[in-house]
Length: 338
Image (cartoon, rainbow, N blue to C red; front, side, top):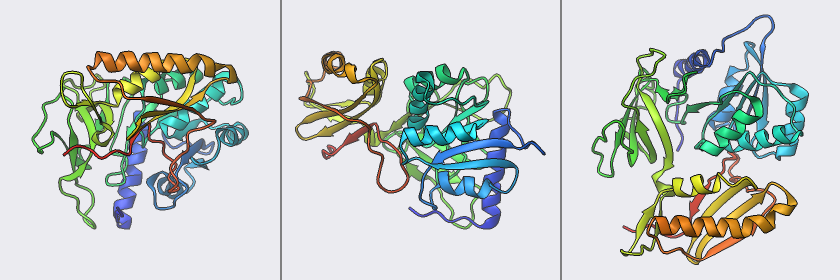
């Protein structure tokens, strides 16, 4: 979709980004300006490209990098720039964290921020281990840029409720109580009159917190973001015709494998295809039986008949080709059941 903002509305979005910075302990610093590296879309109409370009008016020294570049190239440019703030997709942040741990990347950011993809527990752990700081995660979308952010207490992501109304609902648009996982969300943008969005459907699966944040801010907390309901796989059940398998079943299992640098699961007609990037050249022999065993046991625990497993060792997971550069961890080419 294309979403249109007036100049005044876009200024409000940039102000929201500055507020987000306050949550992270950041603010304008003159004359010694903050050095910030952003890694996002090459496409000039995507938020991860457009917002840094709009923010580059002198408050910070901004290095804009493209998500489609190789990790090696990104590491070289980051080493030369030495950012104090690193802003990237979680999948890129995790790969850069491994580069830092292994010595190819040598930066010391004060703040690391991720956005635009699901930040899994293993991604967060890698970034924390690499830079000895908790990465902040923002929930942003083109429909409502910079919609929420966590704070230093890391109890969830504060929803900026002065910008939009967030409704967590089930398949039939009925409200889901706080503490329970929703099937999707409905967004009403309160800050855009140029192109109003009223209860606009987005397939993200969220769980809202029942408790307020200890920081004292009044905004509600998103406790967890599970990904998109489009990522749920429908597999043959042991005791029923089919069962829905949530993407977290794969993320929690595969993310814990030390020898695995990156992965992608693709559900096709002939089974589950695993694209695997090993950490070292010698890890392939370890990974093959380990991934098969872990996934077979996971399917059994979910009472699912394990489909045929196809392992593919690759040098890198290809990012999407539309110049945005995201990685979809769970994909499916089979048609969903009605």
